[in-house]
Length: 242
Image (cartoon, rainbow, N blue to C red):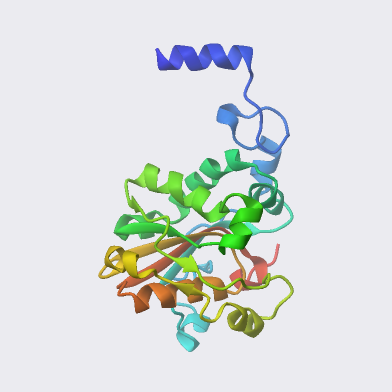
């Protein structure tokens, strides 16, 4: 009955592509946009998730030279001129309908991390920014991802206790200074984090400074492992050119 009802609705209201292109089955992206997105595939570095040409079963030189506060990262795709538009639409244009699509992308790219996670938590916004934006895009992705995977969802495991300036335009060291000490686990939530493996969700990773700040706060509260999954990562961090 559900299938018949969906078919009837599709006849009356034909599915539209989320990016405004030609019609897409299931309300996804148009075929033209889909074919241009640079999805990141295995093999990848077990630490930062940078793609390898061959599976060498080890971490990349950057991860070995400078261990991070988080344990592993996976990104669904590269952040470029194609993926940027739908991501920014979710972040700034109230396109919450894109969040379940991105959750499915992450579920595929980070399936190993999801499988070993005890809980999923979003990178938090400061209350002032949340009030202005009206929603946290990371939480909008994390919620359906938790539903898809059956992993516990902790929407308030972390708080951003300091209103930080935007990370845009800052160097790696500048980004780290900007978010230093900005995140914390509320005392009432420490019991949900202690001894747990947490999967942290965000939209885009640039230098990893925000993810590291969150990971430090979670581990200070007793988390035994903190992994990160994002929709996209920038070209420079991925070490790729296209």
